[in-house]
Image 1 (tube, rainbow, N blue to C red):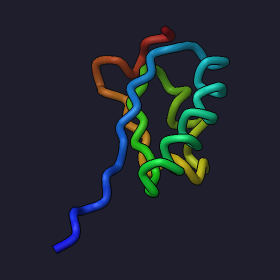
Image 2 (cartoon, rainbow, N blue to C red):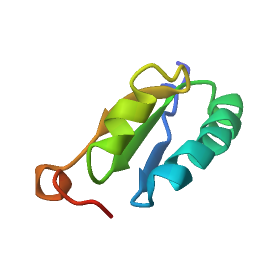
Image 3 (spheres, rainbow, N blue to C red):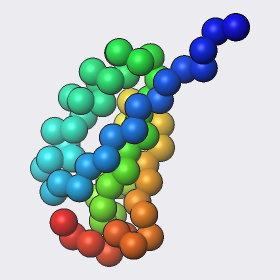
Image 4 (tube, one colour):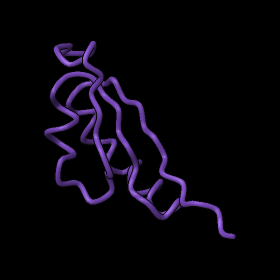
Length: 70
């Protein structure tokens, strides 16, 4: 029985510019593992930036970090 696909989880609490640079990492991880990554971040930026990104499967912002402008 084949193993289930691995979906990497990326935790990133950087600023907006750093999140944009994260796209390159998501591309590398997607090539390596063959599936979109989950992104966990702070503030409203991650969800807005990665909502339509084909290498991001889901974007999570923990409730306790939602209002943070890290």
